Length: 174
Picture 1 (cartoon, rainbow, N blue to C red):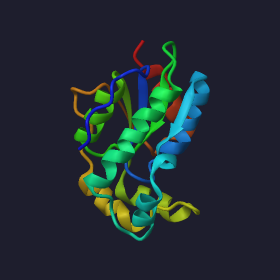
Picture 2 (tube, rainbow, N blue to C red):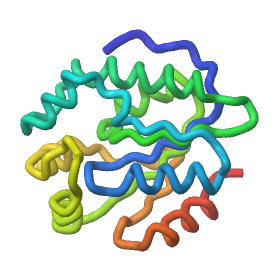
Picture 3 (tube, one colour):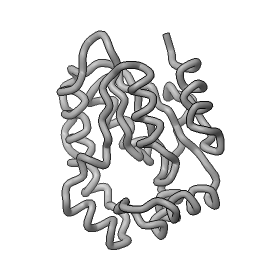
């Protein structure tokens, strides 16, 4: 794990979950609804990480730490003191979320959750994404859902996108 980066970014709304939960779709629409910055976590993976996943291999922790640091920097760069930043990131382990929180301070988590069959179907239906459906099993095995100690809005992805956005907007802390 790398050293924490000094917190200078505003509050972050982390849209997290395994692949296929709709993080990108929900994150973009949430940022639009809030008129705030949006950071797509996948855009910050180094090419080696993308190639590794595209070949059907899960990332190691050692491969994730520099990516998480890049996300912290992106949030700090996009941040304004008066508005949150919406960030998408799988953030499967508590240690990853703790690292992000240490880097940019307060964080509200939108945990997108769904059943294995639904997620596998969604992954198999999308095109042009580097994450193959074969990695869903390893993501589910790695997932450490947020605990009561973390500020979390738990959303099941079987709902429509507008329903999910409404649930998140009405559940965001004041």
